Amino acid sequence: MNHVITPAPVRKTFTVRATPERAFEVFARCMGQWWLKSHSLGKSPLKDVQIEPWAGGRWYEQGEDGGECQWGHVMAWEPPGRLLLAWQLDAEWKFNPELHTEIEVRFLPEGTGHTRVEFEHRHLERFGAKAAEVAKALDSDGGWTGLLAAYAALLRQ
Image 1 (tube, one colour):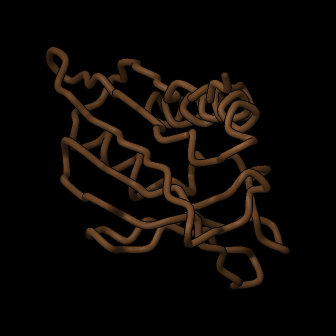
Image 2: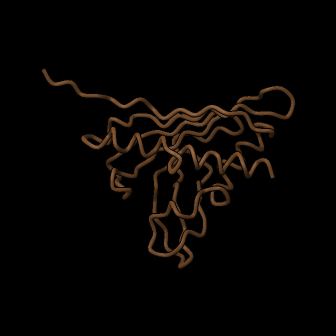
């Protein structure tokens, strides 16, 4: 009997000292300020990360040479409460228009001037035979753990 192991989604929940509006803004519109520069697909150094602010908009990086590398697209743009992105990078960290995992981020008011950020990267089984390996990388200090720590650190400035 063959069993397919489905990796659990990567989930992170943390509180930041910012309103939901500010937390959403920094996450979605200032991603290039907190995204780790080492996490780039381009041929030249990472200059910025852009999320076009509408459903169907592109999610991509810009290199210092002006080149662009698409990462995915916006599935839902609902400020200040929710952002849903399609992650379309495969197990080799290359854009694949046929691959579609999801990143959902919720920004929930938590007392005065604080926001609970609920992050989930799901459908990791779609990475196929490399799903467990990719899930482990995404859930590491070099993955979402470190990226979200950098995001929280920017909000503390």
